[in-house]
Image 1 (cartoon, rainbow, N blue to C red):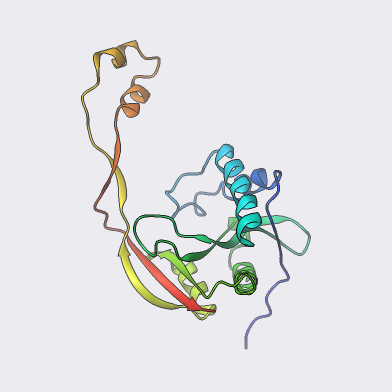
Image 2 (spheres, rainbow, N blue to C red):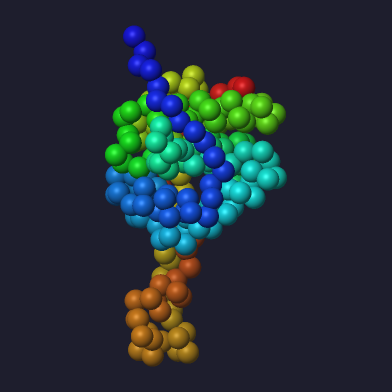
Length: 202
């Protein structure tokens, strides 16, 4: 017997939602497959502002997810996959919830609403890029009726050591490690992580 899903509401993220996202995603478990580190508030301020632009331009974005009480518990939504690897240019759906809301059906309910909205916006199909180790999100894609279409090796950014110019010698910096890092470019290197691409025709 299928469990009844909770009632959720989606809205275009407000300025205040940046702080709500920042708080909801502070738990390390939430960021395990998102680089492993919590992000600064400024990251979510930029992200929520970008979603408002996406909604105005495309009719969809990453929406804030609100529970039955009106509390912001995370986000779900859709946006173009803009990386140079993977399903470039296709519309990806995604989700992220605060740790205390896992396992209660919120993601499935919100993701189904996302599919309805992007279908109404004229999107013919969507993808979901999921880390191969992320069994919880893989289970969500199956509940949505998505199929595994491709497997990618995800590139990782690794520092390539470079000589430090005399004019920027760490000995003259207030933070030697930061000075060295600022001189060290990040370039894609081979990664052992697998990304699964799930697809669904709308």
